[in-house]
Length: 101
Image (tube, rainbow, N blue to C red; front, side, top):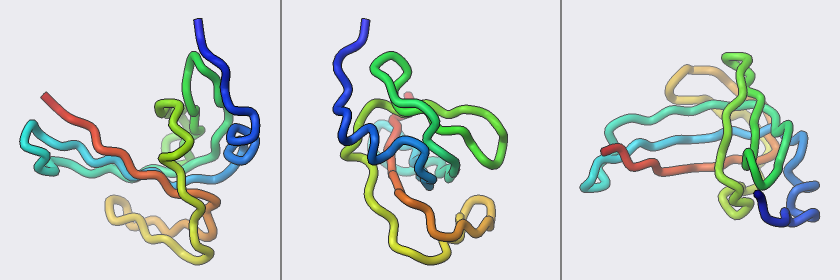
């Protein structure tokens, strides 16, 4: 069973194009791997979280339901370090640290 989702925040993010940076860190918070992905936010709900349809792999990626993790992106070109792709004028960026055991 889920919990209520902030409708205003949901509408501001739904169907927007996002660039997501993932940093996998060890127990000492040392970065051991970085991944960047991008795509469009397709669904937001309390069960799945924030669901992004990835542009590069044509699959979905699910993020926790944390609207504060998304910042409006500056206009312009963004070059992804991990793939070399250039993304033009995304709506939002988001960065996450994930602990690996």
